[in-house]
Length: 461
Ligand code: ADQ
Image (tube, rainbow, N blue to C red; front, side, top):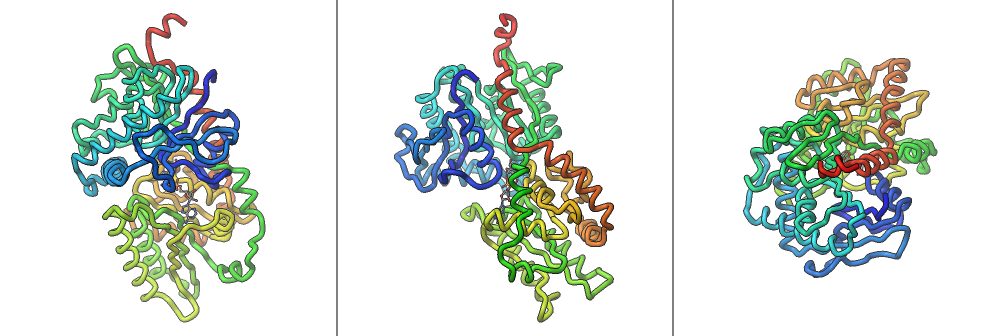
């Protein structure tokens, strides 16, 4: 890469070394390449009309924050991003909330951010935009005259043509995405849906190298399945649990679920499936417990308040009907857990239960596998609807709408012989290693470097 790398994501990490997942991977990438990370900092209330503001100490890369007004927060973030785009991409058109103000806010923030980035970007810089908050950012940067490379990565599922109908007419993902050099998606199925949209909405031609041709432009559309930082996670999970009392309390058959409290994660059906498993188990002396960790998010959005109430009611009923004086079948924890402890909880659990209705990838599935003891691994029960299921085919795959099937999968997982558990674990672990997050960002950036947007440039090279 000749110029610098500019990464754009909704949130900017405030800690010097951010913990966990994607944020950690981007931090590591920028630490090596140098450059700039642009994002909003919830602690930072700037006047949004001003330029980007430097935050934190100077380190290997710069962190520049943009400000959001209360109106921006309501319309851009809670409104268009999380009450329109999120449900549309997760096939929940019924939860979409429409308002002209949302759309205006979304455009206003993207336009302003493009101007702010344009002030710091040079033509040989590479801009890497993350996620659904910023679909129109490349269009806005192109309008200002930025001709350098701009890549996009969508972390959530790409919607099918039918679902795109729930977007306002003016919000054309096809037009917005056509201004990027490379559109990165999680899975091959996402790529197929994205290509179908380009073909159907823009009449774009599909070229044989996975690019689309639109006017005199080409756009690369490829899958880059995201993963975790495997070595760090394995090492963390291996260390013994510091809290001996907690380790003793957690003995027995633990089934673990870890999700943001989001309606896309299929939590009510998961609770129902666990309840059904308890009712139908033949050996009533066997006392499995479901440890569900689900920190609340986006609590200002009504759909998130609704799912929280539904789960609290289900959890109360499940324990009321099944608990004994010395056994609580469901432990439902509503907060963030330190990642070191989380890795160890995964390792103790006999089953990892990951049952979203729709999910871009789902990193919890990969973390659960990476945390297992290869000599005595637990079993991953994984929804077919998670992006992770495209390659982790040796997990016990389930339909998250089918309570009976999930309950049977739990029975199968809790009774699985060692050899089969090891075989499945090894196959899944091979996939987890193949998608290590360090390689993910390297692969993406090298594909972006090789991409060419203008057809005419090809003929001169
Ligand atoms: P998410 O929807 O947030 O991510 P996921 O991929 O599972 O879903 O990542 C969640 C992360 O948060 C995991 O690393 C998990 O360990 C952590 N986490 C969850 N609950 C926690 C808790 N209580 N305490 C501590 N950590 C917790 C979006 C998309 C996904 C996609 C990712 C990355 O929706 O489909 O896989 O981005 O691209």
